[in-house]
View 1 (cartoon, rainbow, N blue to C red):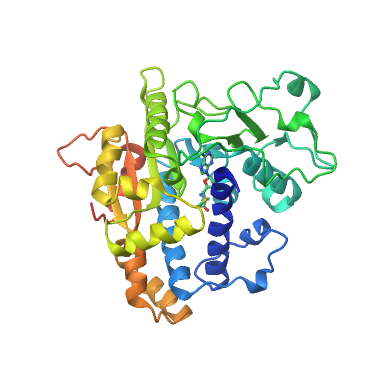
View 2 (cartoon, rainbow, N blue to C red):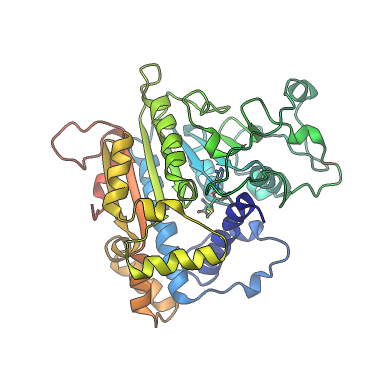
Length: 394
Ligand SMILES: C[S@@+](CC[C@H](N)C(=O)[O-])C[C@H]1O[C@@H](n2cnc3c(N)ncnc32)[C@H](O)[C@@H]1O
């Protein structure tokens, strides 16, 4: 199996973990089941309590930071750019709430992006969550297709094939895991523009872009359709950039930072990032070994083995205010008494020590490019100001 396919499949792992935690009652996300592959019986999706609780902390932490960004200076229009969005359901809850005050972009490999666009087209509950008219560039029966002139304007340039994400051997963007299961799917919908991306779904406030993030390495290359460089913007990387080589993910982040902070755009960019780290300890080594058995490598785990190392890296790239906590810290400090009582009652957590060790190897980082106006390193300003209220480990 190609390395790209393995990385794409990590979305199914995330989805199943989230679905299992949802089924166990940790949170309410009725849309998740729509994303389950047809060969999965929802009734048989179970995970151990320690994994369910860990997934709950992950989802809760990322969601709280996003919600706070959207709620601070709530009358200001804002933008979210989700890197490696996979089957994330957040846009379908946030778009109806913030409507014309939010533009939401989801980026993932072309094959995954098309799959999501097809799913949105198929389910009214997803489609109806998107304000304004929606245009699809995927071919499914009964779908309104883009006007012919749009397609004709596109060029039939094959996708660029950069070195594999881990640096091992070639990868095949379209070689496996194709979603081309619809009888009417034609080559038009697979055509890519000269910059190597496609946008299988677009609306005034929601875009799904199919792109290999490793192509987004210059301010010009991050100018995907609909991205507004004048809006306060939040990048979200929920377990995505960690799959890129550190140089590659640095280049992606640097390109976005430059595009948003150049004198012509001079907007503000924040990031919420979630990823594992090794801690340079035995548990971290076992995690890396277990992933390697499945062909998965997470290069940033070793390159930035601690919260401090990752924060220093993000600061070095241009994020001026930066804070972080591992999931154990977030579990202990972000969940109020009532909520903790609720989750304690859901399942018996026998493996408390193992849980503590596991969640201490996952970090949440929240950073912004807004320069600090006082001496505090951690003071968030402007649309990110609400983040000052979140307890931080660093
Ligand atoms: C572990 S999944 C996480 C999905 C989602 N963010 C979540 O947390 O549920 C990682 C996602 O990142 C995407 N991804 C990884 N490397 C990528 C790249 N170079 N270009 C585009 N997408 C990428 C994968 O396809 C996958 O959907």
